[in-house]
Length: 203
Figure (cartoon, one colour):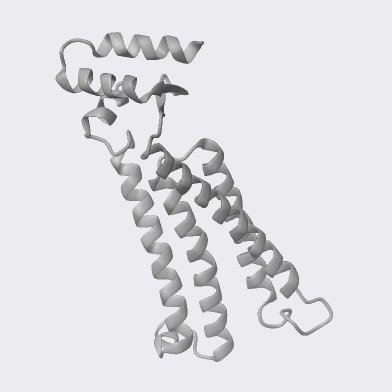
């Protein structure tokens, strides 16, 4: 419950652990870097530096880097944003499908891609398409709900955490402002506000 004061006092961004924000940002940057390197592998002599000496090897390396980079960026977004458990799980499942697609690509390319008796191009593409679509949808909902929470039109949703259990309380804008003023003033009202919010969460 001590996170409530941090959230109001500005010591945490939206009540988030700064380490989680930094980890998400790092994951997103690594994902973007993997996509950029994947593009450079097939367009510059970088492939030779990385040991992909022939065209097929360079294409396989580029596809693998790009395939891993995109879900990493999606995961980075939901780690940084104050997202719900449903959104976190949705992006994680989408990323898992992407990994299945990358694994199939490793098996299929180039010998079983579009030629041969048992090609895997369709299965690989569908697994990756399903994964990216699912992950993108939940990233989009996380971003949309984040903007809504930061632009309250009448009510504000507060997330309470106590002993590892999360609960959500909806308060009016006036109540939110009253809680903010009371906690920032540190006039001994913090415990009373905490008890009031916890009682409302139990209703």
